[in-house]
Image 1 (cartoon, rainbow, N blue to C red):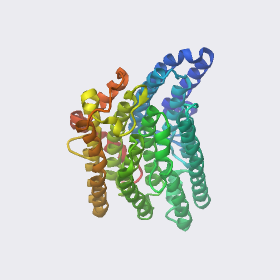
Image 2: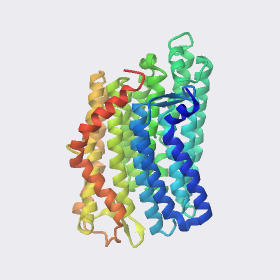
Image 3: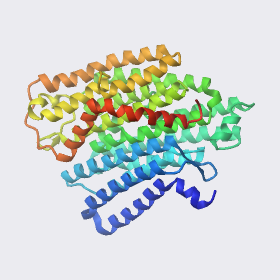
Image 4: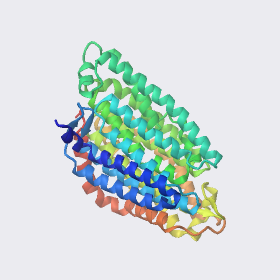
Length: 477
């Protein structure tokens, strides 16, 4: 394959990388007075990249290190679309605080390039480059408000623990390379069935641990509550959406493409991580008063549900994971759009008590937050129900009924804190007059709520076959 042909497979990432450099120079020259223009152009660049990803030819490039297929196209469209929403919410939120900076959309573009590399990784080197490019941008975004002590603490904790997870990833990759003799997934798949099987699997355990940190799965979740609480609200909404989908698709590539014949071994590890995540997210969330910390534990539990689908080791399991993550991304983005829109006396409303009587002050946002809470609970016919339906169905088909039962138990436990939020909004006395609600955050929240129910019932007609085609691109069927 010629260099141009190889490059054509990576046009979305090339376009985003060039756009990032151009906007960075423009921001450096024009300063923060151009921040809104840079944000607008960054959002447009992400939408163009999503279109390029959907139309990109399929194949392998750069000696197999970069893969363009149905799975990467599916993931990139969702990732770049959600990143564009994050640019919109973050820019308007920072503008209201008079803290807007042109670096914010540039960092999201850099993270998007890294996420594109992650979902197209064809070997261990491109896997690590994608993960680190995304992570380095996210570390800075967590501490973006340098004058805020909590944000600085969040960025430092994320960076230190992120360095630990990178070490686990590198150690696991080096062991796999040492025993398999190659970094390419297809070569590793052959080595995992030979005499070096034990050594390769030992490296795989470290690789799984490193990736589990990136998706904030238990017991590698320790950074999540503190980072979610300290980071700016729109940044948390971004953290909880696009990077999670990218990391889950990378998880699927690393397991399905590299170790298709060792599924019985890695399934055990993934099942344990999934069960721990579901139970910890459900029970630890019961004690939370801060909504950002609460949704951090909700995020841990939801990652557990997605890992249940992945742990089946089947095409239907991968399909269920993709459907679940897309539906979850839309719900969580809408929820954090609500949080970024709500304030009282200039102070953000971030606790459950702050939401008392919200339905009397802001009925539209109260209805939207109710929809997101009921969806996260898994109540039909909301989007969260259909995500869990796909995951539990795949688990039952793979004789993992006990895992599905534990998932249902954790959903019932988590219902307490979701319903507590609904009760406070609808039945408690108002806590005071809220500030004016910005139109951009309100629009995103309403759109996500309407999608969660009833639009999802129609959207699944198209999402289901797309996710099935994407899942078929992975190595294990």
